[in-house]
Image (cartoon, one colour):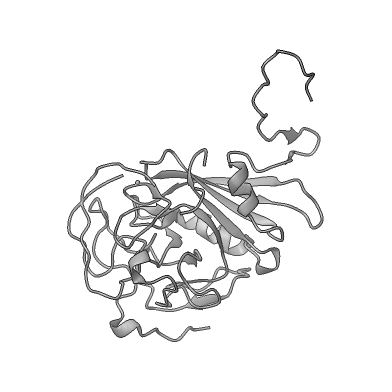
Length: 274
């Protein structure tokens, strides 16, 4: 997550220590953080929650059954009958109208290293086509299915993606509503002391505890401030986040050009195997 300042002032982070933890989908303790945390749980240093205005078959014998095979590709087309690496429970949580699914797979429940792959399917089709795969970072303490503000864990789950923004103008071809706003600025240093400059050049809001259809800077927290918020996809700063998922600038630009509201994109995020 990128961190947009929450209702209260500066939070504190600490140096490494790995843990776990969403829906169907944890690593570090560190040093004190400034008003704009590394990423996740609110990145806006805004007083009183005020928001800046957006700019712009097998036979029945005694032989034990083999485990269900993983999703196999259609060798002729490269298509997949199901998105691999997801549990049946998680697959059922993906909306039926979603034709773009961004899968963030953490190395394990305690790691802040992830792999991101975008899957798409054609209208009326059931098969998924895998796209680019990118390395990414998630929260310092890894993952959790019960995220709370300041726990340094990324929330597991399936969330819609409807809004974007950033300090820089939207890349040509961006389809999501985009708030070009100079308030997308990260100050100070990250969990491991890395500079945060440029982390919010491009962001895509993950609809965890937020109101869809608003700028990523919006401070409304429907489930309460204690559940955290400000969980974004944003530019990587070469270190763990406070809850967000961060990718290199080129990957963020590719996503902004590719994610399409008409295809109802969602993100599925959590430790590998969930």
